[in-house]
Length: 407
Image (cartoon, rainbow, N blue to C red; front, side, top):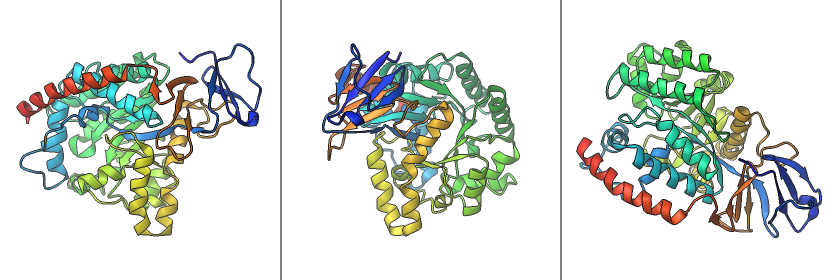
């Protein structure tokens, strides 16, 4: 629950902020008596960061994720030798540890919203509750979904994934967390599953979150099925409601990007992941204004993600550099669209998801989410960081053993 009120006190009273019930109530108003104060003197107060596409289940990767053998030579082999064995090995304890560690680190880096895309094929039912409990408990805003797929057990597996999305959307009562419908990627599902996902979006009044054209293999698969590409396949099967989130888009052409945006879609660029997986650079994303920034499972350190994007975009010319500069702002707009409250501009009525950053600092001093101080003076206030890290390390050892058994 958001506190009744909080006052962010700066050295300039005109920039001090009164927060009430999770929203910015006033800017420049003197602090009312009895309202708790948070010292922000000498620091900049600005909107928190949005990670518009990630995977909380990857949270244990920093704790010794084994190198695949033999080394992968392409994107599909990376999935088959690393991420698909990992997600099949997840159980409730390891997923919980991964989520808590990932969320804690995200908050420490000033990320106040995560858009998650989840898979754990041997633990589907109630898996989204594990993620949601970590997000609500530590105090981060989140959109979650299960990425339905047929890659292990066919259409029955996909039905279970969509059922988990439906169950969560209908039952979730956590104020910081909302559910979406998810598909892993079109190359791992049938037309029947895609149609079902679109039907479910309409029935629940929500949107789809899916990987699109991350690798050329996704494009080639759609063409083999008789479509011009994975985007056109989603459109033809009526599974792309306005507001849907399309991760990557590396191999989309300019006209496809323009079409996705015209349909109200969000595209999400993931520079570090794209580079690490060797899938290429999405050179057509400059053509869409609705393109946000994500990490695709890399740590939710958005300044580092943006720096990685700038390093590549610098080589691609002025148009690409200008487009890259808008990625974080697009994430703010995505949050506004899903919560119906202004985010990114500190004004009366906007969401009080804020970071307080010292000059030249890499990490924020304070982090406020929904009007609640979750980081104060660089310390996590909503959980014991040492215990979270210790449990993550402990569960990682078990996960790597199970992962080796299913590889």
